[in-house]
Image (cartoon, rainbow, N blue to C red; front, side, top):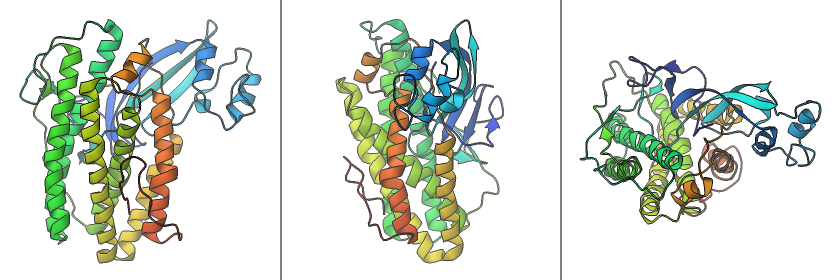
Length: 378
């Protein structure tokens, strides 16, 4: 099974009119783009290997709640609710079939600041073009075909989201001007546009390398008639897209750097990790400014946006990859769904939640730096 990160509930389906022309089994939301997948089956041992319980749940894994539930199941299959949490992916159902554990699931991608239009994340379609860094590149035939195809798919998904982040920051510059933000915030947002262009080029280049063909973005529809620029709404969006989304992106890139050995993938991830940390700092700085300028109404909107993001994490679950070489996938800079889920949970626990407390005066805890990035969130 394949999967990357989730979206929260209430999304609108893709197809011709949704999510910027996404396939009909996909939909968009504030944290990324999601697609549903057909039911796939794994053996019970593999299914239990995906469970992360408080006590290492599952048969022989301790006394976690998931393990206790499985002990009463004659086939030993964990339920969809027993599988590990993740911010950007989740299981929809589970059943037994011919001694296997079968699940349907949905997956998406967390990568930088999404471009949200009408409540859903918008990305461009894919085009065969080489001017975004995705020039024709001989496919790496040292990789087996399923692993190479999976690498191409994942890096292309990242490329499209990085490309959409260019539009997101361009709009953010205008929003900052509309609310009279300090010149430093405007300058940093303007600089972030160039960062995101570089990220998109790097990811398209990697996608083209694995696909063996030129890849780039088609046109990205950016119109959004009647969009509000109320300060509390801008602050809530900055929480979702920056304080949460880009903090997760920075930490996830750091985790990917911990496993990558491929030189070109490492260079792209080093660039992304550094810049996304800086972009997250910008979002935290803007939200602080917005609270100081707008007072209690903005503070309430910010608090609710943080809580919504954390509820999304708690509702999420991870999905499994197809039959690929996981060691090779890691060497080329990709995490497993379980590793991404652990990274996102740690980000909320160690960075986002304490920084939220400090920002909103909910505790006396001081600001914390993101491990490995030196990023100061608040």
